[in-house]
Image 1 (cartoon, rainbow, N blue to C red):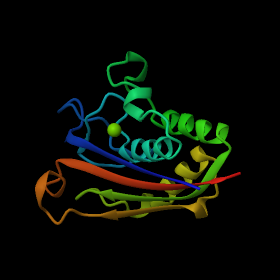
Image 2: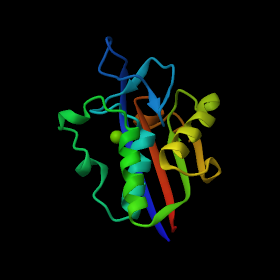
Image 3: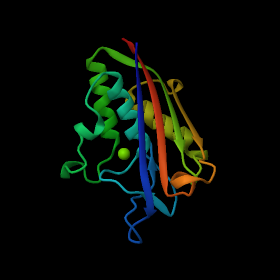
Image 4: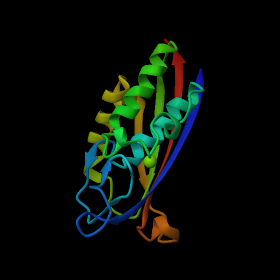
Length: 163
Ligand code: MG
């Protein structure tokens, strides 16, 4: 078995044209929110954190080294392709998902009705059963940048097993 941890944070700003924020997307699901992540790709912090967890578990270079944020190929990119790439590397190493556990920390919006769609997207992109994927949300109790709604933070842990 292999275990991997991933972490990501994106600053949130008013969505264009009011500011530099991109549409608020987590695990490929679009949230209706007046703020969105600032990032080179689509700023999907859930996909980024899980990607780094999978890459970490297999001892591969991290997301920033594989998909540099100064490479025009990844400008505005759908981050599902980063996760799919990591899943392909996992598969090539003879490994499969044991389980994935994700914690999203943000004040707003609430994950709520979007949670199931997020789980479906993660499971489909990783090629695993949705029962192996867990997504939960927490607030930051109103303190610090995350608590003040100025950032979204994601922690992800993955366990990989031999196929
Ligand atoms: Mg990121």
